[in-house]
Length: 415
Ligand code: SF4
Figure 1 (cartoon, protein in one colour):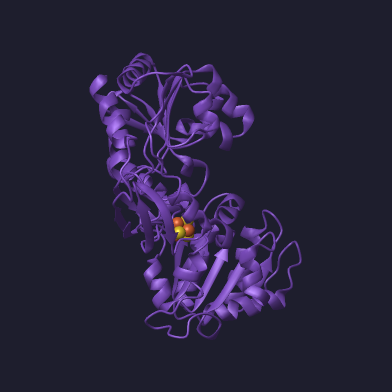
Figure 2: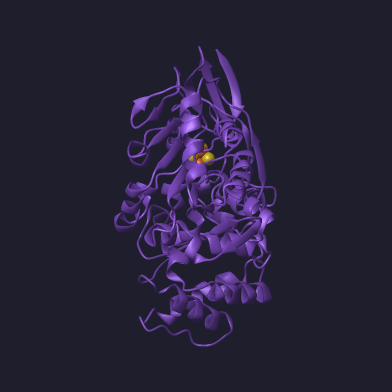
């Protein structure tokens, strides 16, 4: 029996204290991880990888040459996914996209992309999760429910743990605040500091909060009690080290990030505030950083003979909606499941190559399916955590499943 510490790639927190026991190349016990992490680590498989063309088993080289042929013959192929891929894989995918003049996008184009871009461009003050644990006295969970989506966020990275300057941990030394449209599990933990706002009410709430922080009467069209907003404004003004964990609920509600920029500006005139995006897939931030380093954009790009174009028309949603792409390579994602059906159905009209560690709706309908290793469990590499800290990881067990990195390299060679 082997016992080792590993990184969990189950969500954007990339917890690095996961104790794993394995026997005969099978994960037998997982300690420290949350329920999501335990299930994720135990997904590791023995046996051979599946390679399917038209749902019929083939060998690896046949699947690769078929995939290369589809990509070579496509006029405008789409490469999509990569949020659960290592940075090494993402960089090869970018090279591949350049080589075949592909449209390249990830889920951030319809999730937290604007926030990731602002952070990469240093337009918002941020900090690390270690800083939060060691110093934070005011923590806001805004439009996010980490108790469900990132189960160890409160216990290991924010509200509950002791830190260097916060030896007594939660309640006594920290104030946790939830702002959301519903009373989530996280909101329940925040108790009296839960501020329930109506859907799409975030921009107005921010305006009212800014008014409260500036000593004016806070007003909203939905008549949020001014007294409660003033109470919140006073807590925020007194923060020695504040952090906003911003989730999809907040970003979806805003037409653009201007209200958030204004709030962060005034918070940093009166106090000391940071922002961290609540990213779900463990290396979405890595994708945004790697693509930005190559092109100056974080998502939605189209490569064309040495040039790069960028815009919403090159997002996965708009490309599929307008039917501008004629083949798709999907890496570690399930667009048939996650995109609106009216848009996703257009994928059924083009040849799709799916690389994934498990069967998905997309892989079931794909022309080619390649069953790859689970990153962090069966394959090693590196990633960027949601707070932009770089994390490297080794596989917990050996596998016969090829990594995404190996498969992409072989496709590149076969082109
Ligand atoms: Fe894994 Fe996320 Fe759970 Fe940490 S919180 S153990 S990274 S799933």
